[in-house]
Amino acid sequence: MANSPTLIAAVVEATGEPKPAVEVALRRLRTAELIPVGGRGPYSAKMDYVSAMRMLLAVCASIKLERDANVLAVKRFEPLTGGLDNNETLVTEGYDPASIKLPIDHLDHEHALGDAVITLLRAGAAGELYTYQETGPGRAVFKAKGYLRLSFYQPIPFARIEHVVGHVRKVWRYGFLGGASLDGYISVMRERHLGGRLQMSEIDGRAVEIIGEAVAD
Image (cartoon, rainbow, N blue to C red):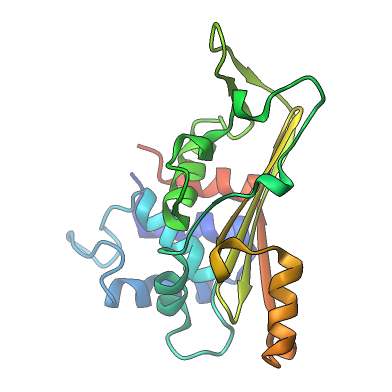
């Protein structure tokens, strides 16, 4: 497991956020007891996958200029529940979507966003983000080209994970009316006169790999 400077450096590299801003986020999470505190120095506490997930949310899912933004981002987004959006699942003709499992598919049908991010960080650390498993006879495991995109929307907390591996594309949604569509989210924002406050941030698979590798067991 990594210490604080290692995790800070990984988040800076992965997100492009300035190092001082990431350091502030870590201090705020430590003060809120959302990441480990202890050891023989201020940066000696060991950071694990939970710490990495919370740092990722604190930096990527916060509302700019909001008081305690980093802590609130974690508290708002980590427990969001959701699951696979079958309407956006696309698989090459000839394949049964239920017969192909990507990393998040190994979680419960409905699960928390925090658990999904941890699952992806672990897969990224193991080099398995672009691995899928066929669940039929033989249960073969394959690696293929693909991409991963994590998107975070504010001020109504909403998250979307899009994962493409080989001939399968899946989308998971978290929060906001039980995982309504992105178009539905934007419509509600307009109805509530919040359109001008819409914020969205994204990270890709490489960012997940960098952060996951930094805290790998």
